[in-house]
Length: 120
Image (tube, rainbow, N blue to C red; front, side):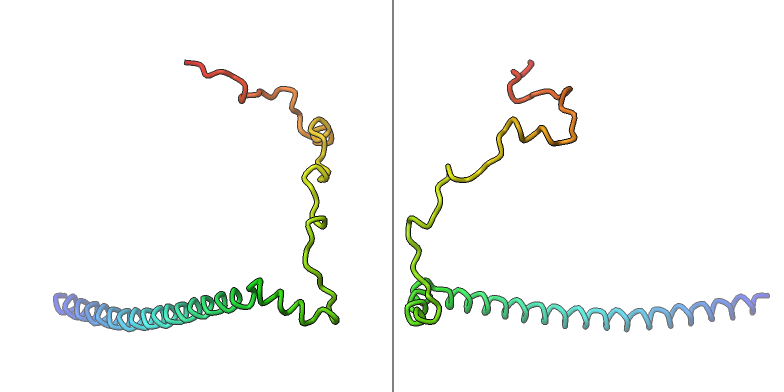
């Protein structure tokens, strides 16, 4: 009976050693994949920074103004004039009282807490 337990113990030790060996290599492979991904992410971030810098360089107002002047005949672009902008009083906001009429919300039991005094 003892020899059976010795053999069983030896098989368990060999099985655990194989499992630890396999887990070790799987962990190393996962770490290698993570390092490759981190390197790829760093490269992508660097490329994004370069693209943002190029975009900012290409969208300079003086450059765009010069391009608009060079291509005036083809595009017909004109500089913005103050009269082209609207005023705040021209914006059509919904009336405050009429804004809540169409909503299916029952506000009859609501409490206005903004005007209440604090209770101490």
